[in-house]
Length: 272
Image 1 (cartoon, helix red, strand yellow):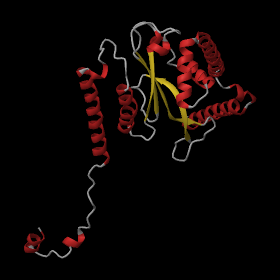
Image 2 (cartoon, one colour):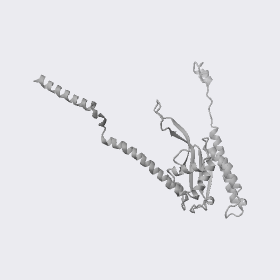
Image 3 (cartoon, one colour):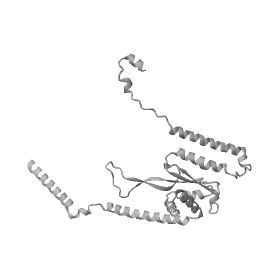
Image 4 (cartoon, one colour):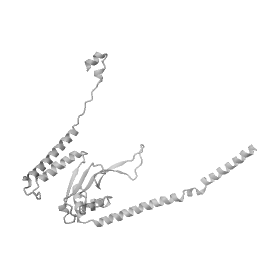
């Protein structure tokens, strides 16, 4: 009865374990992976190749769009950042925000076009994980188009500003677009802004001869008030920067020498 019942269960269990062992240790082990997994691996490899192919096509399409307007931007950037024009061109046509350039050229388009040139952490393709789980990232200088609000600014900003809402063409780009650079490579944005305004903007304004409809130029009272306001702003900016840099630092005091001999309330009153 009971003994034969357990014997049958034991034989069934032994038979199943033998079949399972054969399935695992048999020659068909290499084909255990589901076909869907194999297919996804193949598709992943093919997808990467397709993406690379599409990126190359996109770059060549953008390269074909390069005209005198783009050449003007490229030459200014190359001069200011000390890169070759070929390097800047490759960077621009590879940038995911390339369309911002076209929006800048359009009638009533973007008022500004910004480029950051600064250290970006680049992970080595063959980098291995450290014991703490981090990777070995190396800073590398990179030039890229930006809206100015999505990335931290830690290096150099090269900017182009429109002077009107007219469409930017190859013939008017040098008149309608102003170029400038703002350096924050030391990590101090206020100091970089102060230098830019005091050493570049204000001298340029004070040497300006043509003030458009204002025929009197620098003798005009409104122009003088404007320049005074700019000077005052730079002075306030300088004071603010110095106040931040010279912030109060309390000296560390060894309090033990004052309290080690306190024995009773009268000692505390005397010490106070």
